[in-house]
Image (tube, rainbow over the protein chains, first blue to last red):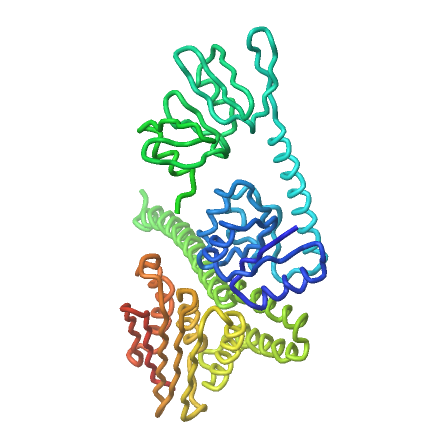
Length: 231
Length: 227
């Protein structure tokens, strides 16, 4: 497992570093004084566990964690037991450590984090392998969801284009928008849903998905640009 | 024929009786009020005591000591003594109306040592003292209010300037720190220093001056005539 520390006091950082040094299977990727600094780090790096001090001056900067696709397990640390502890609405908090805490208490938190990381790893594997069967012309076609490039609707018909298949059948795009996971799929036009994983480029009002040119509807553009991380 | 004294009795007896009842009722009512005031007073005192022993600071300092015990055990005993001295000061010595300037400044020194360790690499602290005589008396825990405030509101990677000086029985304390002009409103600042102002008014009446400047940096200036 990999982890980072977000903590503005050096003595408190040292305690965590000391404990982490005793656990060879935990790799410390970085130590940060402020939430903002960790923010930039997590944009291009993946950490499984984050040690986060509740009393950081810029703690509100931590909201970014919610936006990460596979959010890390968070272990909160605080010096003041009943203060603000429960007010954080982050689903991925696995434990709270009240300073000063001993090594055995720390181990407990690590175990909790390990469980949660394993669980999320399992579920993301399931996601990748998730399949469905489409009934087209009395034949059931197996489709791996993550292989879908995009969907196109034409009046009552829908065409699903995957990496190696193209299937047309009667259905509405609205139905499919609900069926497909939002983490990958986005509607970009009233008759197109695309898989963001396969986007090559956007030029003007057109988006290229593995070489296929797809128009972007005006009403969908804002939402799309928000989802794609544009720097 | 009834005589006059009979009439007098008939009026006086109930009059006396009812006034007695009324007085008893008033007395009990008053008693309750006194009890209530006593209770409120106790609560206020307790609140004040609690505000003096800021548990947040205490636990953070304990954590600092714990860290030192792991990493630098040789320097740990000194820190434990400092924390114990400061607890003693807050719990016992500060109950007196005034304490010696020497003790109060020792308390501040210890506090600054802990803050220095805790904010190492994050904030820069410049702490200067210029005292001509330690023998004067000062009301306890006044200066710490201003200093704590400076740490609370200063921004990351900024500088905190604290200078305390004493000349001919006049003490001056200046705290300067950076602050986030958008985040920190005047209101927030006021709450922190409101209690200080109240205490100063009660204890020093005319013999003090407290000024707060909010420009590029946040600056608090306190001048006291020591007894």
